[in-house]
Length: 233
Ligand SMILES: CC(C)(COP(=O)(O)OP(=O)(O)OC[C@H]1O[C@@H](n2cnc3c(N)ncnc32)[C@H](O)[C@@H]1OP(=O)(O)O)[C@@H](O)C(=O)NCCC(=O)NCCS
Image (cartoon, rainbow, N blue to C red; front, side, top):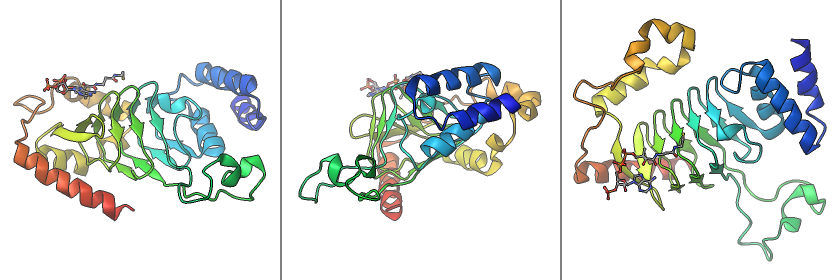
């Protein structure tokens, strides 16, 4: 639609009230952030954050999610979540922004490394969780508890809480997780899922949603998680 295109171009004006107003109009015009294609275009172009269809919440607050982040489809991101993809240079003489941030005009490009982060599909990130720079991947279906500080990659369907965050369990049995990962159901639009919607609106595993994971099993998976983190660096 021509108005969406115009608002997208107008967003280039670096003025906070104008930008807030544009996002507000687009929100109403395109059925909210779960559906808006232009809000997604704006976040990709102006903030370097790619947000998949139907994902919603705190990821649409400018500055909350660091540049270089990709968020999958059907994710729920609570308010107050922060994703930090760049640190200050601890090994420079000074760590002040003058000495690494080109916006301040004392250098031509960023002198610190930005780490890209890939968040999978159907991920739920609880309120005020913080994801730190070393993290490169949050797997599909993962749950990040409220207030968690994430310092390592998170495996698909893991539930992680605390500071530093630890895996407390997995949402489903490994067999079910493998099936869900292979199905890639999130690639379908919500209209296509409608005929099967009852499958999504009750506990998925017959024995209930929880698999009590033995301490040993969690330790084993934590070790795998550690090496995934090292692989990602
Ligand atoms: C992570 C979460 C989903 C776990 O839910 P759950 O599996 O039902 O866990 P329980 O409530 O049974 O708690 C299990 C244990 O973990 C602890 N715990 C739960 N959530 C925690 C959190 N976010 N941080 C630290 N500890 C937590 C509980 O105290 C309990 O500890 P105990 O076994 O020593 O008593 C939930 O607690 C959470 O953080 N939800 C996010 C809510 C939110 O931010 N919503 C935003 C709106 S989208």
